[in-house]
Length: 134
Image (cartoon, rainbow, N blue to C red; front, side, top):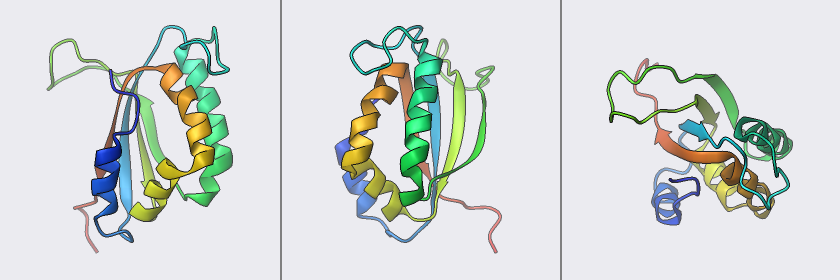
């Protein structure tokens, strides 16, 4: 189970071109019931994640993250047997610097535990556009 940002990975990300745009691929598996103690006690994991999303939306203008696609994850065609995800989300950030600033922001740190309480497992993968190129 991985639901917290890896500080070493964020530091490596910080060392790359800070002005380059990035798209973060989020893979989410919700808990049946949110972990208690984070203000979303008793909520289904999906509802707790929505609460995280509402709070994140209030902070997001500072960081420029723009969800560009979200959908239900259905069949695993290639991947480990038994690995499954509920939702996949693509979020574009104008610069890597803005994403890193968000992860390190004290206001974001206050809502990140809600995300962790909602999720049984997750992946957050930094991507860069290759095609099409202008």
